[in-house]
Length: 289
Ligand SMILES: [Zn+2]
Image (cartoon, rainbow, N blue to C red):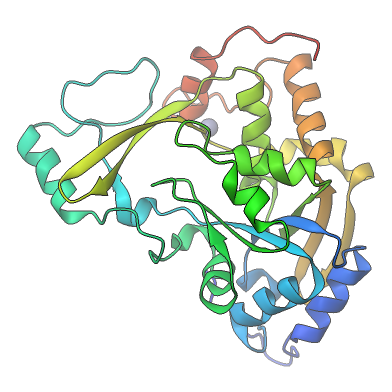
C-alpha cells in the first residue's frame, strides 16, 4: 500500500512540501512527535518514504515511529495455554509450536519494521541515527534529542510506555495520511482505563519463546473520536494526504472521556473480534482520575 502511486497529471510531492506542511502545523526542533503514516496517501512522493522520513527528522527535534516486528518474531500460543478473553489461537501440538519457533526470527535490533506500519518507519530506521526498543513484538524507533527518554521507559510488560514519555515531553500524535485507527495512543488510554488486553508470543532467542502481556486490542472504531478531537487538531493537506497534529495529552483525554461516558465506546460489536474480548476482559471504569 505504500509504493506511492502517481495519477496522470498530478505533480509529485517533494520533501520541501512535506517539511513546509509540518512547519505549518507548528512543528519545530522543540517538537516530539509520534508518527503514524501512509506513504501512498500522499500520492507520488519524489524520493518515496525516505523523503517523508527526511522531512520529519529535519523539522522535528524528536521523531518516534512504531517499529513492530510481529511478522518476524510472532508465534501462536503454545498448546493448552489458556488465557481468558485472549482472542488468539494456540498451536494444536507442541510439534506445530516448535515448527513455528524454528521458522520465526528472534528479536534483534536490525529486524525490519512490519510492513503494516507503512514504509516510513523503516525509512527512519534505515536512514537516520536512532534508538530502538527491545520489546520482541511492540517496538518503537526514536531519533533526536529525546530518543533515550522515549525508548528507555519501555519494559516487557509495559510496551506502550514510550507514548507516556512522548506525553511527558508535551509531544504530539502526528497522523500522515492515516486515521485514528492507526493511533496507538488510544490503546494506551484504553489500558489506563483497565480495558482488557492480551497476551501474545514471540521468539526471543534460539529455540526460546516468551509470553508478552499487555498487548493492545483492535482499533476498528477509533475514528469515532474524530469529532471530539477536531477542535484540538491542527490539519494541513500535502499532496493528497491529510496531515493532522493532536497533542498526546488531548488524544488520551478524549479517549478517556469517551469510555467514561460509554464503557463500550470505541469497540465494535463483532463477537468474533478482539473488541469483544477487550470488553469482556475490561475492569469497571472509574469516572475520575
Ligand atoms: Zn472490532
